[in-house]
Length: 87
Image 1 (cartoon, rainbow, N blue to C red):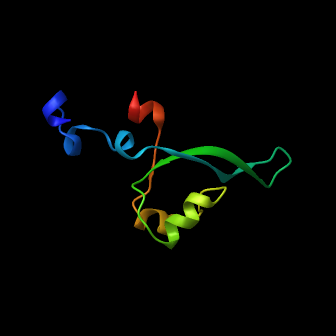
Image 2 (tube, helix red, strand yellow; image 1 turned 30 degrees about the vertical axis):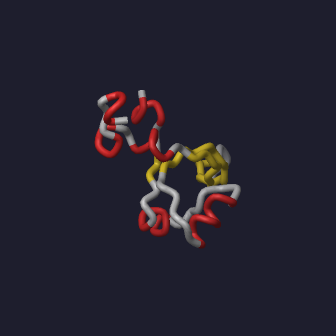
């Protein structure tokens, strides 16, 4: 790309364009009208460089994002706000 377009792939191309954005559901809690908390799901976008290993195999095949924040941070998984980060 550097020779043909004059764009340096490693420094000028955003991370989400190089590695893609993955979409899955995640759980979250909200306050119920009658009191207490209710568990709901929503769509969440995350970007990461896929590496080979047991964690990434589980992550790619699971229906929902892992709720273990420590595992997510250790493996370099970024939450993505497509409107703010890309537009």
